[in-house]
Image (cartoon, rainbow, N blue to C red; front, top):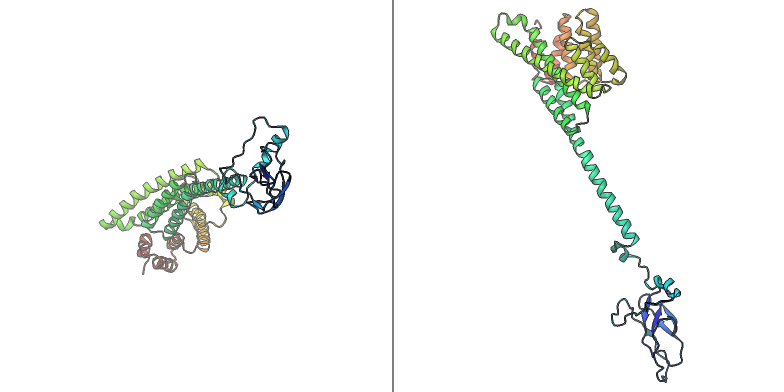
Length: 357
């Protein structure tokens, strides 16, 4: 016959005859939860009836039933024509399992939740790796490019432009990286053009200086044109980006354009941007090198040096401006400080050589 545990509702098979010929109630110990409960011989309607055996002289011993789930020799046979009571109670014959077993069973509610959590974590990991992996590398390259730009010598500016281009390939949606590359090209080209202009008088009687002047004039023109094209491309992509507008202002100052509208567009968003101050100084000197233009450029360069003391371009431009104003002591002092910070700075060497001892 079949009995059900009163505590955990597990179903067991009890051999008929152990309950006695007349006895209807007997004690059973559950094999799972070890609960002792009273069972009735008519507990389950579908249990098979057997003929009444002979009476046992002594009360039946306490029986420890074996679970049907672990005893293949005692299968449960149910009729295909179950009553309505049996159908409504059929779910109770399979007890709910909690604890470690449920954690190992992916079909339970807890297992489904665990699978969902694992899936969400995997999706988040994929998203982070694919969204932030390349930008993280691009940010590193951008930092390296800005550090090279601060040194301002020709090789450092070339490296800065190359690093900005590499960073832009890693983060193609970043307009600022493309604009910073344009700014580095413009700084490099303008430095070569300034050296070529200042070597004009010396080159008339010195073939080596003449060759150096021609090389700087040729390379400087090419770099300014390339930088202006890159700045225009950045502005076309995002006309409100500060870096793009800043680069376009510098390009206009170095060519025949008008930098004022670009500076006005970026002025509200620039804040304490030393590169924007460099663009302002270049714009002030673009229309001429008279006293008012020089004063405006000097103020902008002073602001750039205050914001970023490591920006050697601001110090070199200030030294060149002092040389134009015939303030030789200030020019010598500023250019020597640049060479102490970066002995490879070619433009500072040329300008210092033009300062009378």
